[in-house]
Image (tube, rainbow, N blue to C red; front, side, top):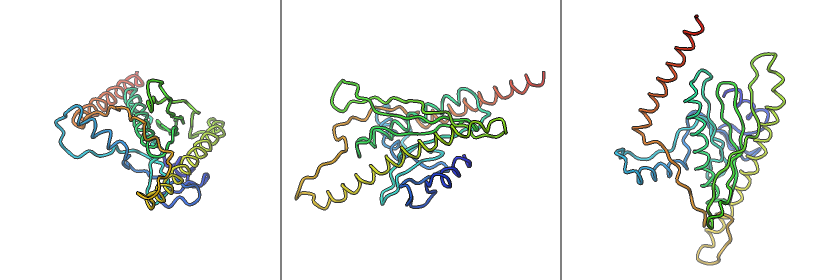
Length: 251
């Protein structure tokens, strides 16, 4: 993760923890909260009548790429896990990443009319970049489904033999930057329109590109108590698999 962050901040001009003056994109890491997931989690609690009566909080994310403005807007959620994890945890992270970005994309579409985003998912030094877009399902006005497309595999080289992957990885990160800058520009443009519209509220109607008729889908998030139990099971599964592999290596 440190390597990818350095590539963003040094090579691509994405600001880390500052105002994002160069690209309009800032990087926030260290288990920050994705705001759009807070609404989805509150909806989950209301629908399933869970025993968890605590306040809903957004899911913690390893790295969020945000649009820099007076109002910070999340545009991409990215996750990392160490290499020595079980298949079940890899799948869990993959699913979580897709669900969080889908939740955020519907929020971006409702507010700003944005219908795609890009994100990364890493396990150890190997990862991938994917594009997530909204597709009209044809069932009604504003009804969308999300479809993910693999853009490229990303590899952080650790040996001389793996240096051949650098070109494709840098090309992928440049593609990511291009899309993020485009999304950030659209968000900032819409925020300025909304600011001007608020000044003319009740006087003159102003158009907006946000999808006011779009319907946010139901995205399932595991209730907190069950999530803790599931995490323990996943960690146990991870421990068992690591123990078996270690024992096998000794044979």
